Length: 513
Image (cartoon, rainbow, N blue to C red):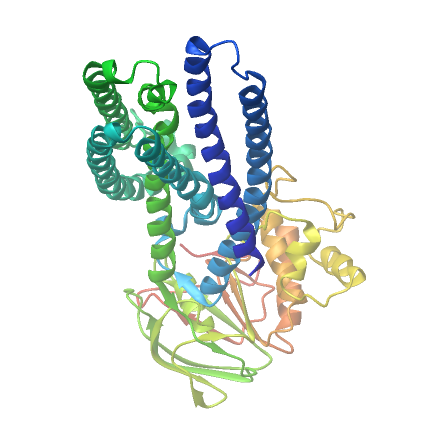
């Protein structure tokens, strides 16, 4: 309700600001014409005071319109972003490109539409109404030429709106196909030197559509100017002689002469309409293309799978039982589906086959009593403390420091240090240990750890093994890895590669590829 009041006040003040500015133009035009033909008794002071008063009103309405408008913009932006977060809270976003920059940029375009487009066009409509009122009241003979001009302008305006929306659809499709290619190109920078010629995705099609939108805007502005000048010339040729000595006659020609100042805003604002249309479509696709994930709050005491696999994968079907206080190792060649197997067990991605929790069949859905530690653990753009508390929000600072010492990150004594963007850059090994710290902090009974030994030296692998063994004394722990340290106390081993022939090693580290 508060947002709607702010919006209503902002739009009202914006229209007042626009209308007062237009009124100043009309009154000033009349004042100049009246001063040229007025006699000695003409009161010059009153029109000057009125114009100055209108100027003050215009400045004040413009300032407060922006003030309330920005308050509404920020509140609306927060609501939109929270709404998107809520809609995606239990969803798995399938298409990466639809979610890219949605919260950072598209939400701003959606939230700003009221200030950037609605307010501008409402002010123009109000000014047109004021001009028609002046024509009907003061110079009725000029009403029909003005109506003809406004009809022609309406056709130009409508054509611009339709062409802008059509180009916006094409631009959205082009941006969607190009955006992910750009990111993939940047992410492949480490191997650019291995290619003879590395060319980034071409943006020519996007620029072509953007130039077309700008070109249509310029054409609409030009056509409006030509129409206004033609109408003004027609009025001067056919009606000026009959209104000699009538200072009010100059109002309509002056309004037509300055048409770009008050109608130009409505024309230029169509770019904002295109941006809004693209952003709104992108955010709608973000929610629409997400597959909902059901949540299960059941405490995981035992897990049994039969003919189980991640959906839409070539990985073999797996059958097995995983009980409390056990450590299971998942092995397989690269691309065999180790990561997706763990993700499907946790319910992060759809699966097929039977998955029983405590003898109860729960084929799909996210297990709240589980923690999946990624192969490349995510670092939030936040403090070290926040990155740890996501695994256990109730953990104390002392507990966090203790866990950091256990995983070999004890040198990070300041848990409030910023480790996100432009903060401390984590190495691959540090990220691995951060993921292990989250596993130790988690109160979940099912711990799924993806490739925990990569990027670690032998000393840290030994530490990681001891901590994973400790976890497996009380919880169900599954580890997917192609590095198999001899220190790992494995209860069972599951291969996702039927042709895999494992070798045992009592010393050192076994590497499987």
